[in-house]
Amino acid sequence: MQGRRTATIGAAITATLALAVAPVWTDASRQQKGHCGGDHRKSAKNVIVLQGDGMATAQRDLIRLVTQGNTPDKELVMDRLEHSGLVHTDPADPDEAVTDSAAAATAFSTGYKSFNGAIGVDAQGRARPTLLEDARKMGKATGLVTTSQVTDATPAAYAAHIDDRAKQSEIAEQYLESSKPDVILGGGEDYWFPAGTEGGHPDHPATDPTEESKGTQGNLVEQAQQLGYRYVKDRAGLREARGRKVLGLFANEEMFEHRPEGEGDLYDPLVPLPEMAQKALDLLSSDRDGLFVLIEEEAIDEMAHENNAGLMIKSGEQLDKTVAVAVEWARRHPGTLIVVQGDHETGGLTIENPDDEDESGEELSKEDGPFTVKGTDLQVFADWTTGGHTGADTPITASGPGSERFDGVIDNTDVHHAIERAMRRR
Ligand SMILES: [Zn+2]
Image (cartoon, rainbow, N blue to C red; front, side, top):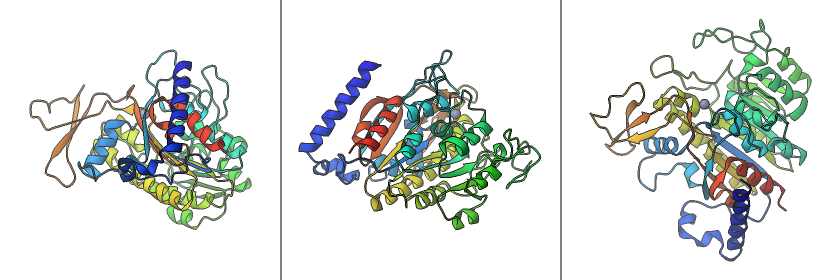
């Protein structure tokens, strides 16, 4: 472990030295991939972390093939970022070798590996400072944006410290009383309102009658308003929102319905992820010290759990449009580090040619498709091998100051160190 980290630091130093004598823009292939302005030696004033939950190589490729095509000029925006690496996702869990989103996000946010379910605490249960908290200490504006519950594992691990990801009302309370993200946008209002208080979205909706308010810490939306947050519950409200502190809760639970195809599955968020991201960046961009924003597309993971490739692709396309929003914002705000990552692979996904003899599995090897490769007559099948997470590495791509630190095969804790150093470098 220590040896690998030292090797990674060594590689990063070598990369930095190499850049000093060979500017990145002289490399034709890199230039074609887009560049980050050659400002590697400056600090990252702004950090935008974009996560496709459950997104590994096959997910990125299936999204690319179906939404863009299969020729080199048809890349996803996320695949055009200048630097790239592979990330090991192993947790430090006593019982399981494959990570969940909580342990993975804790590794990204704190630099400490932990047990599955852990939120911002190390393997011994000790609270460790997160990237968002460190950014706030540096004076930066901070934000959490997700299509999941705003208190779900990934955003929670950046702004809370608790031993169990299920304690979502306690996590919301910690946002208000301790980590204080300026902008909080996503779903999950049921953990902010106590039972019997419907809130902005009615209990027991037709799309999922089991949903109802179940907050355990009182009316946290009222508390947020008393603390100066502007509370909004729909697209029009978010459009009109002004000021720095905004709490937007756009669904009872996730902002989509994750089910098998044709069984009530739905991906049509009340506010599309690119729009939430754009608004968060607009609200936070007035801070002269910069910003740190975590933006997550959760449906990639949840649809993969259901082996629903159609909506996994649809949500992945929205994530890529959100990366485009971040890239455009960074073009107007120099000194912005953009990182696109997945926390683990979900579904054991592979991409296959149609094959009548192979397209039989429904239990252990579920064939899902066909999907047309955009711009061609070619068809592919998604082949799922599990409804759970797998231990495969996840790709990471990055641009902007410090992005060279993500090159190579790295550990998920190295992602934390790289962002921390990029923010601190002067
Ligand atoms: Zn999952």
